[in-house]
Length: 415
Image (tube, one colour):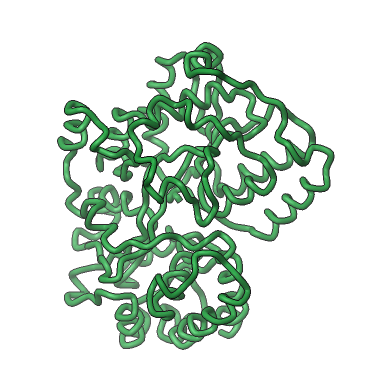
């Protein structure tokens, strides 16, 4: 989110849980509705011919929108499939639509494909809302590493063939090197620097996706490192570890921008503060956007990526097909196309979108590897190998609403 990455596992957890509960009580709960099954990908292609696939995805990323409209959609048309991008503000909008249509008994759902990960994927899994067992049919899955942990687990929820990896992401800090000449290199150092430089740092208010990630990074740092926090959520682990992180954030609040009386509403608002020179350090789970923002002049040329000694959290974004999709065969064709070396290379180009590919280059032939080797290096964002150095896995999705709500009650409400 993810925009994520994209996408991203986005907001309104209470609403999601209510929708899941309602679905569980409805007559359509339980097994997914009947859907076509395929013995081979050739059968998929035959059924997909002429279908129209509605891809629901976060619409706030101009580069992502342009990639889908100008590169992926024309390639899908060559396969006989019309791809329509449906822009949404929040991935949860797509999940709620799927859940409500399933509760109504619709087997011709309006969502065919979703850019999804994290809590939203987990919510759909709880409600049997995703089509599963289709990933192994995709020819281009041969180019992924079956042992890559980022592709097997999504915020603590096993993928289990119910979503296809699309690209990788890494939570990233960035700073203005013109105003911050000696940046800290640990999260503890960032918090200390913020306390010593009042008003020059802040973070988006959870449950914004990026703000929520920042909370989890603080949790890991204050606990003594990623290995000190169990990936799986439990009330016992939360009660033991969360209070220290929340106290650290509460102590920091008076030193934040506007003394912590208000927070940027989302990552875009934080980036605007950075661009306007009101803060010196910002953050993103989509570092691919930084190249275009600096190149266009939206961010200062002195913008630099700040890698932390202990690493940061990383994950993957996925494409999922609802169990009641109207055109699942077409969705599978689009998904396989999006995973192809040609499309992954096009999407990885910083002039296009700059997203990190999910392919294992050792599984590519010489010509396919050459596509990636020829990509221009970003003048702003280092390669994935550097960004993901010492990276740690995302905590399970259940940590997200628990920390967000505790922050709202114990940090935000205290100002």
